[in-house]
Length: 174
Image (cartoon, rainbow, N blue to C red; front, top):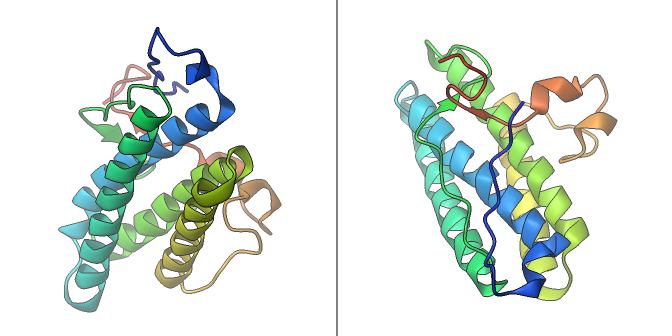
């Protein structure tokens, strides 16, 4: 599995901070979520379609805020990939709902790491984002998990199933 590279400013010694690394990881996860919601949104209508559009907008706003935070911390925000390989095919509404739950689980994991790496207002923002992802995941799934953002502790969860969405072609496939 490949992970996005985290570009740093050469002139800032703080650029290697755990906080910046966690911000960049959350930003990469938001890029993937924005892409994923773009895919699944077209397969949902009615109330679910509206929920998907609202989640897409929320992830775009979080993505933009994280890019600003990365710059504030002296880094250059990690760029979005042109495309991402989805964890499974999304031919219809039920698969789109499953994908939405997986995306939210992955975002929750990134924000759990960000909560651990930050303090003060940034920690509060990360905790709020973790809560929002957990609530959206529970809505999409029709139930919740014991420890949102901590897949390895979720009862019956397969940690491999909640890994990062990979860039299309990163492993030689499309």
